[in-house]
Length: 403
Image (cartoon, rainbow, N blue to C red; front, side, top):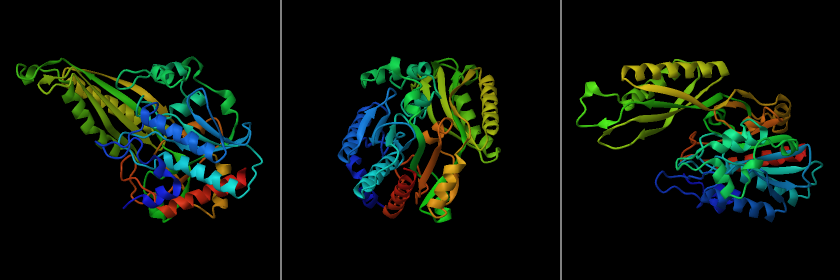
């Protein structure tokens, strides 16, 4: 299986070599790194090529305008960053589909009656600074500038310093009421992250809701010591406590209706093969259909972590790094879209998106394009040429009818 048809169709081929991860496979593109900067430059050039005017807001999000920027704008777009070793479609599909849709409408001589824009949000995946959807969270005030600017990456670089190095002014970042007030409706197209459209035999679907989800850091602390000189009964080993907790997480999630809990990242300090660790940081991603169910599962994970820490003479702290409650997308535009797209299926998703963040402040909707592998956040993520075309057709239809 190759993606040559889709990339040729959509222009993804223009960015196919940017941010390739030779170790993990797939792509590693993180906010304000070199790959991200190249992708931003590509977007500006591509948007300008089709006659759009591009600006960057105070939080690092890019806006390409068709018509004069103003209130009640119809906005579409997505993001260009990725998880470590991610696929080619998560994020970029929505951006290039928006570019191709507007290019087609302009070529057909369509004149919108309201402003239309494409937005590229910054740091959607949260892979560099740990909090997802930073661009849309800052824009909407869902995170304070003070907290966001203090976030650090794996090298100890703060978000403030990284933003400053990209010619942004940290003191101006945060809630942007003026830009936010321009959005009359935001429609995000995204490759599906799951198998529902496969099971429904449909190329395009419309989002109904997003699971409640968040990220928590479990920090286990013990006593660093010599691996050979310290008897097993004398150890305060946080790795043992952390490992036992991690092993318990799947069972705790399976015992909770339609919940998901994932440990995808750990850090052992100091990290020597012949050294008993002093600290282990474990990051757990927890999701469920309802807010209270998600938080109850986190409480059970916290209790389990404390139990295993006590058993091993260690301590543990649990820190919430991000939280987004269940999102139900606006019913009115969703129903219009179902009719406009000939009865396209409506489906929930377990993946977070910028559209979910903005749903608390502006009308939002989402389109999904079928992913025949059912795999996302991995190199196997894919979408066929025909399904990508169906996604563009859907976006053209919606923009044409809404603008």
